[in-house]
Image 1: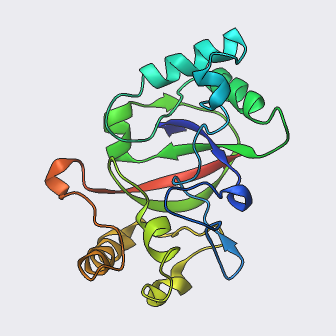
Image 2: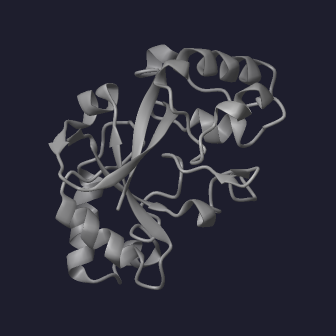
Length: 203
């Protein structure tokens, strides 16, 4: 199996510190489980920036940050041992984070690929504006009344099963942004546009 990389993210039910949001992203008991969760939150925390984290962890985290300067806005690890070590450190005070894998032809063109034999559950597709944010989290989960026609298409993980919905959903988001109902994204010419990123939860 080929993936773009691994990410430590906050558990969906604990994903409460997203910029501009005062509640956990959940609709009708379905938690958003995509890319736009707190990523590496308990790795790049106060202990990291004050250099109080263990030296081995600090060096791994520093290397991860230094290797992710591609304007995608998504830091991934392509080393399973490193990702597992940082997950373990992230959960040092209790289980609050999990490990996910990402794959997308466009993301892999930027990040490169790595082969993984990890066992995982592929949860669905998140639609992400390159260098910005998830249009599912920032659109449907923040303004469900505007996106009501899309609610039945959500799966149990708050994602879409069909990547071919990308164009129609992107058009809906752009209309919402034009009407002031969602945060506008940069013109597509500024990056790779909107990506369908498949998200897998590592078992």
